[in-house]
Length: 298
Length: 116
Picture 1: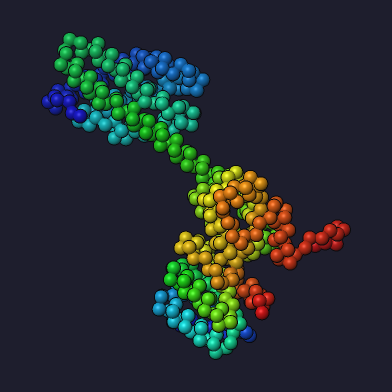
Picture 2 (picture 1 turned 90 degrees about the vertical axis):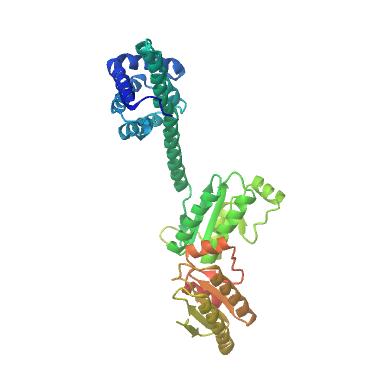
């Protein structure tokens, strides 16, 4: 998109545009905020409008300095000062729970306000008005996309971080006894998680020199063919290291699904509860827990 | 470099110390089988604890060797498979059905003793 004007006039136009912003900064901000406020009445408690007003002043300042620089570049996203300010603000608003549909509408409101002002200033010169309105569009319309993109990207980044944190929290490997590990699984087991679970478990087996692993799936809501085969792979990998796995916590519902789906868990030992699993593991190690008076047992 | 084979009682112990080429693997296999013949060994203990990477060919040779050793009357125990190697085997679909696996040589010897 290029405005069809000689370069000198173009620069002049940009200067005029910048001058309009400079001369009416407060009014523009006020109108801009008025429209935004009206659009998002229902978000009164979510958006801090005073804070947003301050932000708007910041945007206007950077827009003005960008325009008055008089280059042929209309891409605000390539202006480092504007872009870093935008990223910073977007990060701030994502953290404060602003919905993703706000930023595009917010920037389109600025376009509307600027159009009004340009109409007022250039109403005597129609061709110039057309050019300057076109410039206004080229400058401000992409901001809707850019801001939305930045917003969603930042949100996705946050979700990724949270998913990672949850995954780390949810795959603990616990040493129950010398040579016995417990792996309590909670939540859905997808392929990304199973990789982490497997890695975690295998490393712990080597580290603690354990030969018995009790895998408890009480907290796994659904076991389908996928989950079953992933579990089998984990068990096989552990077996390669020299550790035997005992599967516990299979609920009646899961047992029913497994049989209905015709899933064969192969030769994995299964026990009803974690307690029974521990008993089996101790048994496999030829160990026995006996009761005795204090100080007598060691 | 050839793979050293140590005889200990009724068992043969093989420690693989470097990553092996395909030729080396086949050569080692032949050597192991002829040693079983010679010594009439009852058990075969292969230690992989220093090996971080194993390819599908090595995996197959290992499995085949175990199968052949069993035919010749020796049980195979593989000791010290590293987590990375285990994951690779799983990804390649190598189940190593013919071998016993243990954490280290110590447990391997115990297992061989109990198998006798």
